[in-house]
Image (tube, rainbow, N blue to C red; front, side):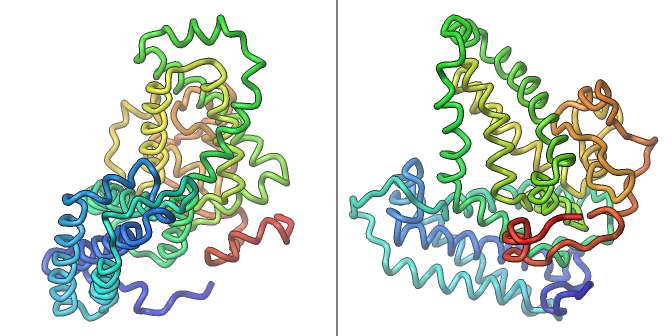
Length: 371
């Protein structure tokens, strides 16, 4: 498999004083600042209505300005310390674009649109996820020689970006099936479920959603048409928090629609559903992470990185389909957790290499049959 040029991936030290930490912080801040600046400049197209007012506030503007200054300072420091200049260049270039975009910001504008691209969602989630998962992977890595910016990183960042940009569209497509089937559930049952304490609703939502998810996930591995889309997720040969973003849009919409529909149909309180959505986002990202510190006592009860990494292993195949609760895999005979072992490799079976790059992965399921 062809490797990317050296300026994308480097074997240089990532230790303190190498310029890696300053460069990473600078690059992430620069990219986020640029995304926020785009959203501020064209809020009626690039920011969600729920976040639009926040982008017009003084705190948002001052925070964005501070981010660009920090990105520039740390970017220059990284340039001075590292032989490979990618991080510093990205930080300075994106910061410059952010400053340029700020000249077009009109906070007095009241123009609005309900149908937008979630550029602000991308910036916000990038900052949060990087702040949480990159330190975890650097402090407690399972694969210590795995760089943060591994050779598939840019492809997975593109998937991360696409899911954020299309958040309104995917949300609509996910929720629409539940809205059209509302007639199929008894109002008495919906009122009864809605009256449960929120904690009980949350726990019930986890069990119900993961039960449905287990069988939808199982079908994605067994039905050839579904596998054509799902194999894009399994084509990742390196596991970290960003690898979980490699999920084809068709796969994501179908899976989430089938999982969330029962929660809406059964009358779960929106607060309980919201709590579950936060939980599933964190959990689904965490189980892909390059983190090896999770205690053994937790593994029988909650899906961990080691549990899900075996699902992505090149051998054995088709194990550990649950996202939250390993009990379902034990009940249905697909559980696999051998001792303290971790997979020797990840990706498609037989060493097959899937399509490389975001655009090829996006169109691949429509034009080729999977083997």
